[in-house]
Structure formats: structure tokens, C-alpha cells
Image (cartoon, rainbow, N blue to C red; front, side, top):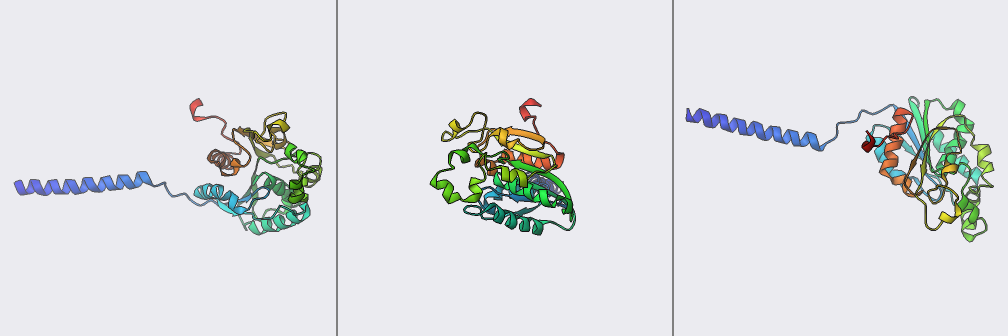
Length: 255
């Protein structure tokens, strides 16, 4: 009887340890995400590279999206050269099948709009999904206006000058699209540029400029222009929009 009890106790202990270990494993790992037959093409902003968007890339991949990052030079380049380069890259990114989404930060949004302006009708190798523009100066930037005669703007070249509120007409001609888009606008100003704006802005682009497009939905986030590209909440809102066609305006505290 004593041996039987000891044997039972050992078995129970082994079982308990096993269940504890399994419980620990299940709580510390996310359930595997099933890969979507959906591609997200991501375009970075002025003076950046593909590496600037790596956090967003990881967040999208964790949700099962295929991601293709554009990587193009912008400083000192002409608008035509940038558009030719990015157009070819986007074409190379297109999958044979499946839905294709676009996400552009700042200048990247203008690049995407220009591509869709010329190629939307011939796009489907896959189906056009959602388009999201984050901090894109759709009607130009007051900061670019202020710097128009500076050495910095000379260094930035043609494409930098094209982002002023006066020169943006070139982009407006190149980048008009009927597709309604999601707009993320930052509202955290910079002490260095706040006097250049008359309304809400992210330090480089006003909310009014970011929203000067055919808007499907818009959300304002308390974040600066540069931080937007690596912000967790921005990434969360992008992912939500890709799935739902709208942003999640209700916060947890309001539910």
C-alpha cells in the first residue's frame, strides 16, 4: 500500500511538472500567424532609406503580410529620377496573385500616389487593397517654404524644393488618384518650427496638408513627423486599417 501511494505521488508530481511547463510555454509564445496572400509595399520619406521602416516591416510580417520595402535616393535627386526609380521598384514588388496594399511615410506617400496615378488600371497582377499615407505633405510643407532660399535646400536639391506649398503643384499634377486613402496625421509640433504653422502639425507637415487628399478615414496621433515611422501606435493603426478599411478611433479606456 505504501509503495502504491509513493508510485502514485511520483506520477502526480511528474504530471504536475509537465503541465506547468506546457502552461509556461503556451503563455510565453504567440500563436502562429497564418501567412496572408497579401503584400504591403512600403515607401520611406525624404533623406531616408529602406532601413528607416524596419520596425513597421516587422510588425506587418508578424501579422502574416508579405512586405516589400522601397529603397531609393532622394537628396539631390530630381523628381523625375525618383519617380522612375520607385516606379520600377514597385513594379518589381508586385506579386503574381493576391491583394496589394501601399503604405507611404512623408515623401513616400507622394511616390505611391504618383505610381497609382499612372499604373492603377494595369496594377492587378494582384488586387489593389488599401492605401495609407502617414505624414504626407499632400499640399506641401510650410517648412519647405521657409527654407526655400537656404543652403540646406540647395543641398536637398530639386525634390526637396518640390515639397514647398508653391512647388507642390507638380506633385498634385503627377499624383492625383481617385482611390480613397487612409491618412495618419501627427499633432506633436517642434519647438524649432512651430511658429511656421497656423494650425496643428507634426513639426514638418500640417494636419491640413496631410488630409488634402481623397480621404477614406483619418486619424490624428500625438506624434512628431520623424517618430511616426517607428511608432508602435502608428503601426497598430496601419495594421488595423489594412484589415478593416478604417482606423480604430475608440481607445481601450473608452470601451
